[in-house]
Amino acid sequence: MSETLARKHPGAVSQVAPRAILRGTMVATDLAATRRMLEELMGLETVLRAPDRLLVRERGHRAGEAKHADPYWVLEVRRVDEVAVPQEMLNHWGVELTSQAEVDRAYETCAAHAERFELGRVQKPRFRNNSYAFYFVDRDSNWWEMEYREPDLVYTALRARGDAVED
Image (spheres, helix red, strand yellow):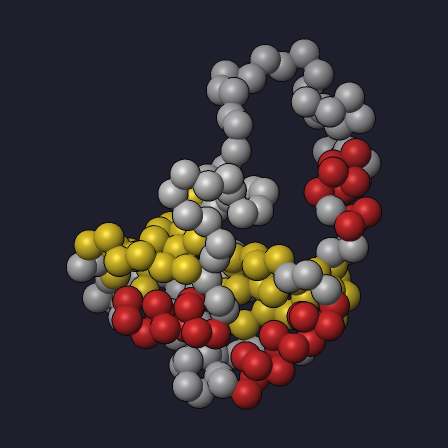
C-alpha cells in the first residue's frame, strides 16, 4: 500500500488481501443487441459463454499473452426478460479513452448512431470529477461513461490526497 495513502482507520487490519477488482455484472434483455453495441460502437471484445451469458473485455488480449492494459477487467452480461431495477447515471461503467479528442470523437459517434444502437440519452462532454467525459445510457438502462484523465490526475494522484472531508 502507498505510504501517501491516508487511511481512515490506521489501526484497522484488513480481513481480505485483494489484488485487483476483476469483474462486474450487468443485465440486458437482448444479448445480440447489447453485443452489437459493445463491439461495433464501443470497440470492446465479447464472448458468448452461454445462451444467457456474455463476457466483455477490452480488445487486444489473447490467451497466454500479457494483459493489454492495467487494470484488466471483464464484465459479465446476464440476459433477463425484463430489467427489474433500472440503473441511474451514478451507477455507470467507465471506459477510459486516450485523449480529450477521443472523447469528443466518441461522443460524436454515439450521438450519430444513437438510434441504430438504441441508446437513450447521450450527454455532451464536459470536465467533471478530474476528467473530461460524457455519459450515455443503453437500451437496458445501463449507463456508460467515456472519459479521459490527464496522466497526473489518474488514480494514484487522487488517492495520494486521502479523504477530502471528515465524517
